[in-house]
Length: 248
Length: 122
Image 1 (cartoon, each protein chain N blue to C red):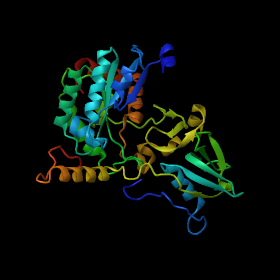
Image 2: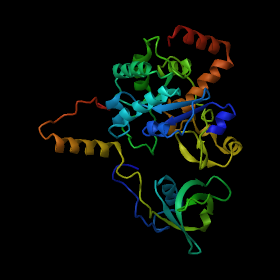
Image 3: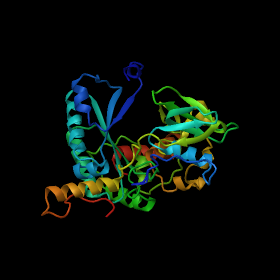
């Protein structure tokens, strides 16, 4: 990670932050404008601990966030919303994160994938639109989202996109995961192999793939939103308008 | 892996209604080490992280129990796969967590019944 920062690559280190305070105290990280912790928090204490099936995680994560901020680190959050999420509680969560000093938040609906521990509580498309509309139709100016406003409008059902599964590729010790961050159907040894040998036509809503039918997750749809921003004057105008007004 | 349905300990016999491709897919999804038994009788214990049958010579890839790899093994060279390692996903379902939480509450506060926390999926 230090090598990436030295090359002036932006690093968002996703973490559950359970050990963050401990690792900071051990001097494992150094603050940099090129480095930000992205702390996974799915809501306030009760909701987050339930989402990760472990009591006490929220409290540990918040302690880690406070310690990171105190030491001058950049901190963002990423939140997955599940079926039954309470929009009012999530708005309260946004306030809490802003009060803590988090510089930006990411939100996304959960996705039903076979290796996830909870198969019953992921959001279907219409329920996702309803939830995000309630959540974001009257956003507070102080809420800072670290993501495309067009993607947020997509979550609210105000615009439609097709998935760009190669837009946020996942690379780990096994290689380049195909086809995307969520669907683990194998690995390619190189990015070139990933792009050239994955049957992309089998993925995305229009493909008819059942696994993609209800997916609205940011790993595939945020790249589509960003592409729309820079591929058309209308997309660029809409992005600027939403950014300046703070309305989605 | 769904709650309570673990393949841990499964030693399938390929061909008796159990195709090799299906066992390989299950090994790929399995969250634990397996033992790959080759047609020459040799065995490799490790974690299967990849498989591809959309190529001319279908293969699996794994890291062995010491972390060495990736090791590639052709489908044609596999006799069977035994699910010998601990299934680290077993018992980690949301339902299992809720049951454990309810049990703990009942044990600690037998006079109290319901959970004050907002519930998902209600």
